[in-house]
Length: 299
Image 1 (cartoon, rainbow, N blue to C red):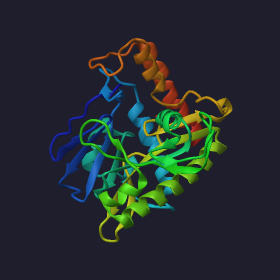
Image 2 (cartoon, rainbow, N blue to C red):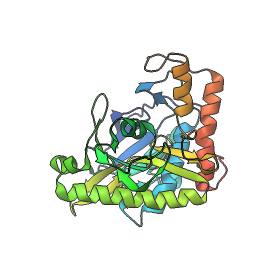
Image 3 (cartoon, one colour):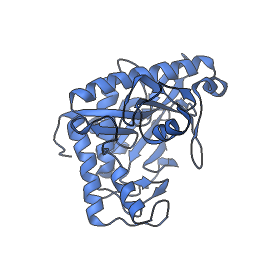
Image 4 (cartoon, rainbow, N blue to C red):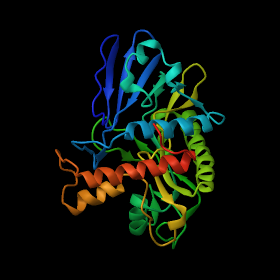
């Protein structure tokens, strides 16, 4: 079954609906939010008419794996993603099983904390023109797909509407304060390094990824929030396919983007995906889950 929309009755109140997730308040757990991952899929900032079956469950389970692994390094917003630990009011909605997380509320920082380990995508385009990445000077004569000497922190602002805006790391302190800016930059790079090393042992290269952080206002420490290290927030490559001078195919929506582009549908609303694209895209997500977790997909 493909879940494109959720609409939970009282005592739930939907407070936000993004490209993939629906967020709910509930008076029975006022200090928390319920994150529900649907099977919606978007590309070029447009949500497709149809979704990818079980994609929301896969994203939830991948995030669950990484949150559990990284909690020794940073505070996270996770209360539980285990179905048998959910409040009874949630368990009354079996359609939420394996696609929801109960999370603690935190003030969210308006920064996309992007870490790049390899020169690819928009970074490669900027480098070819200016020799920089996000305005940061990087070594000369690098090739597409080449690893940076050290992971590069390249933040952007979070736009309520439209595209996020790339910013130089030095500007971040003007937005969230110098102390939090330093914490975000250091924590994002540290988490990336841990994840990169774990993934590499499983045959996956994490070329780049995007973290989001909140702040625990009682301690002024950053908190890892949202999803983490999924195919929607990261660029995964098969290590076996990697060679400097090109960018391997990703375990993400690039397959879908390529189809949209070749059919001149990129950025157009109202697109319904053909079955073979749905199946092939779904397999990319499932392969990512199985390689990262070492488990067969059986949900």
